[in-house]
Image 1 (cartoon, rainbow, N blue to C red):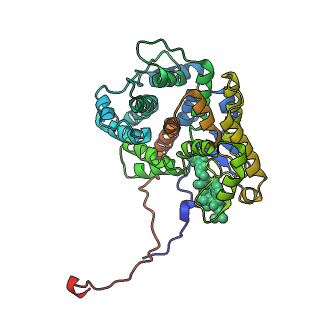
Image 2 (spheres, rainbow, N blue to C red):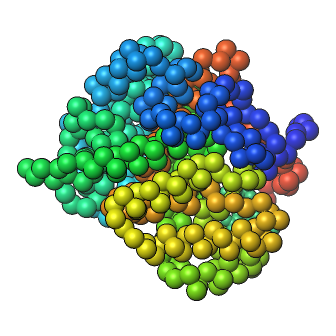
Image 3 (cartoon, rainbow, N blue to C red):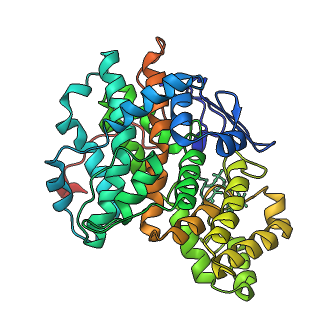
Length: 392
Ligand code: CMC
C-alpha cells in the first residue's frame, strides 16, 4: 500500500528529462534542439533534421554526406523479409503490416539488438531510419497488388520513397521535384514531438531492456489510433464525408454535442492551446502543391478551409482552445500525390521513426534511467475468502 498521485492521461507528469524537442503550447512554438520548426521546414531537409535530432547539432557538409551515405547503405530489406509481407492478406491495413514487419526485424538483424553495445545501438538506429520507407512502400505495393520496387540509393530520401511507391518495374519513372520537396517537408514536420503517446510507448517498452525493433514496433502500434497518428486518415475521410461547404454546420454541431462521440478530426491537441505551428506550414504547403500541380478549386481543400474558418469563429472551439493540428492539412497533400488514405499513417510512422530512435538513444544513455513502472489507485474489493462453486 502507499499513496500515489493519480494523473489521468499524464497531463501534468514529466516522465523523463530530455534535450531533444521543446514545445510551448500556449505560444504555439516547436523547437528541435533549439531550432524553430518553421525554419527547419523552410531551409533544412529531412535527413539533416534527422542528424540534428540524433546527434544534437546541425551537421557540417562532410558530416551530412557521411550520414546520408550511411543511411542509403541500409535501405534494402533482407530478401527473406518479402515472405513476411506475402503472409498477410492483400487487404491488410499497411499499419498492421508495419507493426508486424518492424517487430520481426529483430529476427533478421541479430547483430544490432544488443542495447548495451553503443555500436549496435547506432547500427539499429540507422537501419530503422533507412529501412522504414522501404517497409512502408512495400506495404503499399503489396496492398495494391503490384511488384515490390527496390530502393535506389542515388536518389534523395523522399524521391526514393516516392519511386518505391509509384514506379512500376520495366517502366520509366521520373520523380516530380515538386512532390519530392513536399514529401520531404511532410517527413520533416512529423520528425519528433517530445513525449507524445507513441514516443512514451517506445520509452516504456525500452525501459525493460527490450530490443530496438520491438520498441519501435510498439510505437507504431500506438501511433495507429485515431486520437494520435491515425487522425490524418480519419481527417481526410471526414472532409470527404462532409463533401460540400453547406454541410459543415451539421458536422460542427455534432462535434459540439456531448451525446455524440464524433470529434472534428485534425482539431485539438493535448499540448497546443494555440495554432499547431506544423499545421501553419502544412497549410501553406497544401496551397503550393495543389497550385504547382495545377489542381485548381480542389473541393476537399475548400471544405477544409471553410471548416477551419467556421470552427475558429465558434465559441465552443475558442473556449476550449481547439485549433487545427498537423493532421488537418497533411492528408490533402498526400491525396494530391496519389496516396490512398490507408497510407497516411504509415507515412507519419516512417517520419516519426527518427524521433522515436533519438528518444530511445537518449533514454539508454541516461545513467538514471530505470524500468518504467507506474503505480495505481486500487479501488477493488478488500481481502475476502474464496467461495466454493456450489455455494455461489
Ligand atoms: N472536436 C470536438 N471537441 C473536442 C475535440 C475535437 N477534435 N478535441 C477536444 N475536444 C473537447 C473534448 O470533448 C473536451 O470537452 P469537455 O472538456 O467538455 O469534456 C475538451 O475539448 C478537451 O478534450 P480532451 O479529450 O480532454 O483533450 P485531450 O488533451 O485529452 O485530447 C486530442 C487531445 C488530440 C486527443 C483531442 O483534441 C482529439 O481527440 N482530437 C481529434 C483527433 C486528432 O486530431 N488527433 C491528432 C492530434 S495531433 C497529431 C498526433 O498526436 O498524432
